Image (cartoon, rainbow, N blue to C red; front, side, top):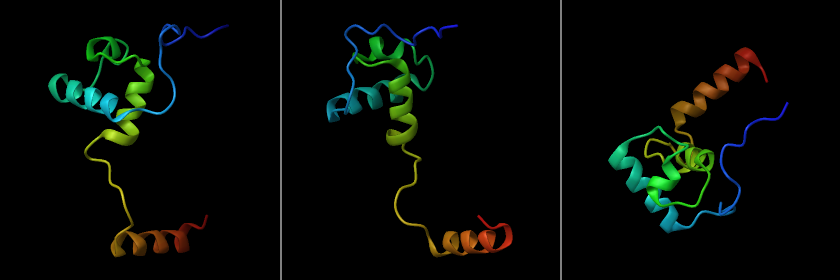
Length: 87
C-alpha cells in the first residue's frame, strides 16, 4: 500500500521558511482561522505543502506558544514529579 501524497511535488518549496512566508501564513490565518490546510497554501499565496504550513503554525508561529526558561514554580513541579515518578 502506498499513502496518497499530501500535495503535488512540482513547484513545492522545501527548506527554511523566509520571514515573508511566515507573514503570509500569519496574515491568512488571522483573517480566515485555522483549518483547510490542504487548500491554504494556494489561497495564501505560498508554494508550500499544506502539511508544512500546519506544522510551521503549530510549532513556531502560534501566538500562544510559550518560549523561554521554566518559571521557579514549573521547576519545582518537575522536580517533585520526577521524585514521585522517576524517569
